Length: 169
Image (cartoon, rainbow, N blue to C red; front, top):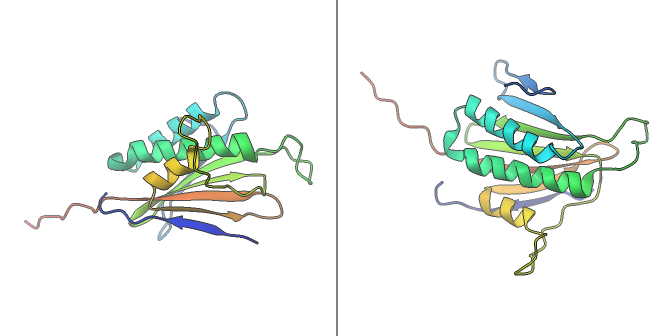
């Protein structure tokens, strides 16, 4: 099993059907959205991510989070989605999940393919092979790992700015 991780150091820094949300004691905020297989998939992924980031008051990273989610979903739909049912007969599915950690926002996209993502430098005028370089540039780190008998999870971690210091009265 191959598990690849790419990391960068930075010097600074609703109304959807299919949302799964979990918030309990000591559990980080979590939200997930099943990605449609039609032409609305990227619009839905961007709206879902924007809405969740807004709900969690993470405005400083909203644009980067939306771009990262959009790139990872585009790759999953284009390269990772199976055209045939899974071995158990269920239809192939792509999921987008977000979870807030103390100092980061984690974006994870699951697709039913075990085909590993490849960071390929794009040709200067090429229109493709730009997704993962964008994810790498905007994130603190990204990677992937196999998930279950079929499928993989591709993730990217986005650093959150430090919380402002609270003044004591």
